[in-house]
Image (cartoon, rainbow, N blue to C red; front, side, top):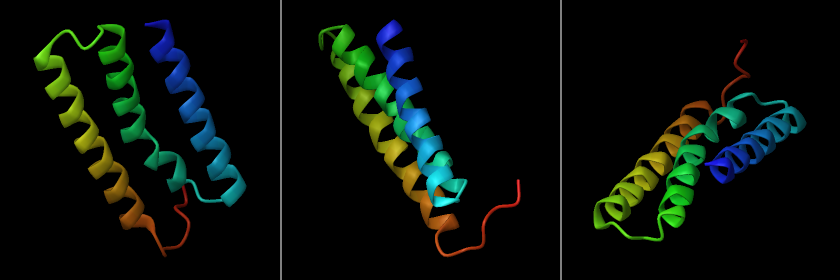
Length: 84
């Protein structure tokens, strides 16, 4: 949906701006998982919670997204800046 595209654009832009401000590129990477969860939640809202399968999928996606964000953050915390 247009709402999901707009929301993910805003979230990823915030992550990018934050990474520029902190001079830490891995900060932008942390936003990928939550971005996918955000699209999942918007899809769930768009479908008015009308499917138990969609609700379960959204919850599982959110758990995965949180784990991904945490893993990326922990992997890079306290290390020198990634030289991409």
